[in-house]
Length: 403
Image 1 (cartoon, rainbow, N blue to C red):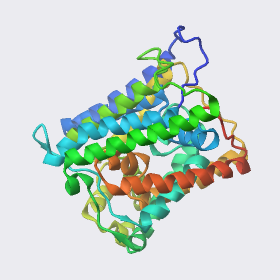
Image 2 (cartoon, rainbow, N blue to C red):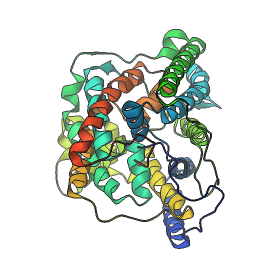
Image 3 (cartoon, rainbow, N blue to C red):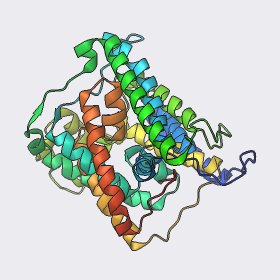
Image 4 (tube, helix red, strand yellow):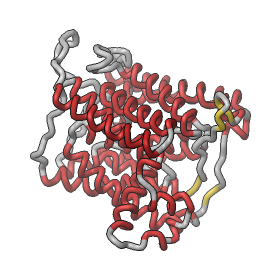
């Protein structure tokens, strides 16, 4: 996934929307919304709408991680990472009091707090390489594919394959050395945990800003380039605030934070189950929730509904911004990078208990120590991926880009 504002139009011009694309997306949204309303609860419909809003935000702000990490590692540019720090800080401010009491406006809530161990280190490292090869992370793959990125559909397809393979191997990895889940909120209390996290965010901000200023003489703003709320582009700061608020809304509606990749394993498992593969007999599919998922509609799965919403929200945004322009001619090396990258993304996410959203964003917003271990290992993977990209004729930019 990337963090960029790469629109070439004059910042005061307003592109004419692609009304056909936008209308098509809205029609699909309406059809799925009616189906959800008929078969599920009003809460699920609200989560679908939240996913759509996430897709709009992600597309208009082109907000994410892959390009942000790449330009930071390659050239010391820090705007993308500083925007992520704002997002994390606001999310922690919103999440920690609710998680400390276990309730949000009367709704019971729990955080994404996962074990700390070998599988997280290996999985996040593999995921980091996959980000740079596949061209995006989990949410980045969804919004780029939904916005018309043909190559990202290849990444997504193999993301799903890698997720199924990761689920098949998951029990072996979980048996590797590690520790039980550690919650900073429960360990220190939410006030102390919040102060600690905010101090770390501030320290990281200071360090990366100093590095950027030393290399380039100035520090790029995260408030620049905001133009149109409906048509984009958005300033990075707008995206950071919106994503934190939407994750908080997800916490209230779902009772837990935003996640992305568990749906990919479910989709792959359902496909295998539909063609006769006895997925239900696999040890890794013994959990009741996974068994139910094989039998039930994807519209009964919160993560699936939100992922579908993200793709459709991005399609709406692409139409509004006059940016829907699929590129069908993809170099063979780029296809190969998407295949390998997608497999690594899916496999790594299952080992590491999530992706840049479920493990990193929602993990750290939940006070989970595994979120910090995840990002440390993932950064090493991204560093390796930056050096691997040229082997597949993929550029290593010095400025934020679209992927």
